[in-house]
Length: 130
Length: 126
Image (cartoon, rainbow over all chains, first blue to last red; front, top):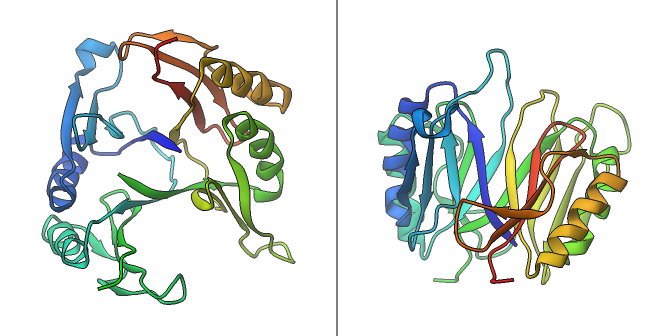
């Protein structure tokens, strides 16, 4: 259903450094980069797996614009959720809920939540029983 | 890659009317609706296909801009999405047509009531 998403950041390099590390355990990495010179405006980094950029981080967040969104990435198993959380925290993310079951969503909802440098709520979730 | 995303809006009640119309041509419907009984409490709504709510709207007090692209199976669905968005009060941000991002990238863009840039894209050869 979702093809891709994107958002502007306050500090592009800082956000890229964060996502490079946080998304690595999910096998998601930068697969396309477009410079400000190429676009004539903002610079973009597109993260994805299998070569398709799905998650776009860019420059150009207007001063004073404060918006927090939430996105959840699929993790293939619970160990991957744990690795995502550890990597994101090591990369300067802020804890927003450590790895664990969230049975109020469903019995096998195993997730972790981290705030990115702009305060967005980034989740990894595994739905499989173990 | 994504499990779900949550898009902040200033008024879920207003936005569900808009998104109901906008996403219908893509076969995406509202699966879950939690409208708060009083002002000041947060409402949310989840949209999806095949029973999984992958796109959520939630009340948030602060505005900002997010870009979300939905997959469409045909170019006709992209055009219907754009027409539905305009009819529902959305702002044109690029009509249905091929874009140079990739071969067969046929997309249209609508600005929602909060300024979010919402796209439908068909990647199939036309």
